[in-house]
Image (cartoon, rainbow, N blue to C red):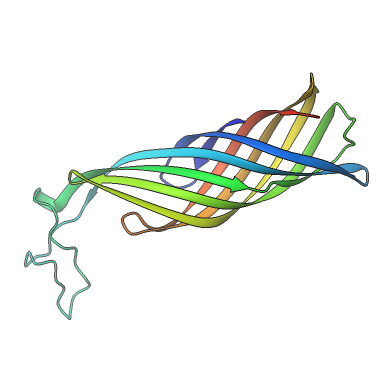
Length: 188
C-alpha cells in the first residue's frame, strides 16, 4: 500500500508505506474482513521558538512570579531554531465490513483498526541531537472502496489514526493523522 498522512498537528504531511495480510468471511449480505497491517510514516518539521532568560539570568522563579524559562540561549530574546523528525511504525489489526458479496466487482467498506504504535523522534536544537523512542497503543477508523482488477482488487481508503506521544523534549501530545491510501489486494 502507498499513502499520504496529513497530520492534524504541526507535523505536516508524510508518506505512508505498508503491507497487509488478511482474510475474509461471508457475513449476511456482505463480507467481514480482517488483516494484520504494518505501515511506516515519517514526519518532519522545522520551526523557530524563543526561550528568553529570566530577568535575573538564573532561570529560577521567585515565589511571587510564575515559573520562568531557564537561560538556555545567548541570542537576544532567546530565539532559536529547531527541527523534529518523527518516524512512526504502526502494527494494526484492521477489521472491516464490506457491504456487498465477495463476488461483486465493486465493494465499499468501513472499519476500525486497533494499533500498536512505535515512535522514534529526533530533535535538533542548539546544535544538540536528542533521540527518544516510545511504544503506545492507538486506534484508527477508515472507509474505503475496492474494484476487482485482475487477480485481486485495487482499493482506495480514507481514514483517521490517533495515538498519544509522551516525549521529554517534544512534550505530551498525540499523533493524529488523516490518512489517504491506495493499494492492491491479491485474492487467493
